[in-house]
Structures are given as C-alpha cells and as structure tokens.
Image (cartoon, rainbow, N blue to C red):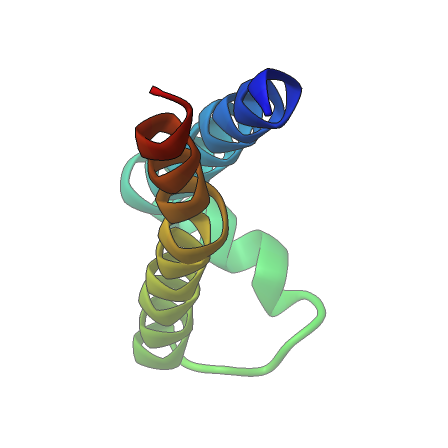
Length: 79
C-alpha cells in the first residue's frame, strides 16, 4: 500500500506539472501557441481558446478523479 501511495503521489505531482506547463503556454505564450497549432488545424482563436480551456478542465478533472481521490482514500485507510 505504501508503494501505491508513493506512485499516486508522483502521478499527482507529474500531472500537475504538465497541467501547469499547458496553462502557462496558453496564458503567457498564447500567440505562439495558437500559431503553432493553426498550421495543422483550421480554427478560430475563439475555438482554440474554448478547446484549450475544455482540455485543461478535463485534464484537471482526470487528475483529481484518477490520482488525487485514490491517494486520499489510501492515505485514510493506511493511517
């Protein structure tokens, strides 16, 4: 159980680092981020923004549901 707890903790840390990097790219390098994706996909800035915010939201929800909640549950049981 302690190994699983450690793995889940690292999963949370790594996934939140990815989430933070995605958010930082989206907020601080929006123009470059949009232009780099526009090469492959033809969508407006509004669509790009909506897709990124939805993606960030779903990714965050996935982290909470699949990493953080099991980590908290194991931490409470192993007490």
